[in-house]
Image (tube, rainbow, N blue to C red; front, side):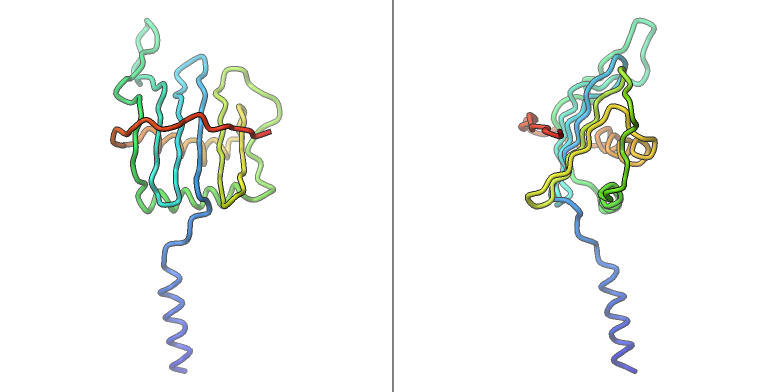
Length: 168
């Protein structure tokens, strides 16, 4: 009886540890549109560190004269995700890794950015690319990654952003 109780307690404690990341690296890229779509290149590593190149970001309050770039939010940045954000990201990656998960709608829209998400695991890579995402993918994955891109990060050094997105 004591051994059974000890085993239950041990599994309970071990069960509360942080789960392993479901990826080695995530690469997220957006293209511009005919409006105020930000242009991002984001790399997130399994150790929670990230690098961001924000190429074009517009001010939230635009005037009647047009859209204005926000240079304070543009450039190279680096940071580290907090535990809660990282765990949330891990769950999202696990969910979209289901072979039956549909991330795109049929057809296309001409004035939307192309979204590319590459998930690297070991030597394997899974690529998601669309300019017409499903509502679920938009609301739960793209908006989440955009929030990371728009969050607080310190200025970083230039890094290589010419990853070959051979999704097809």
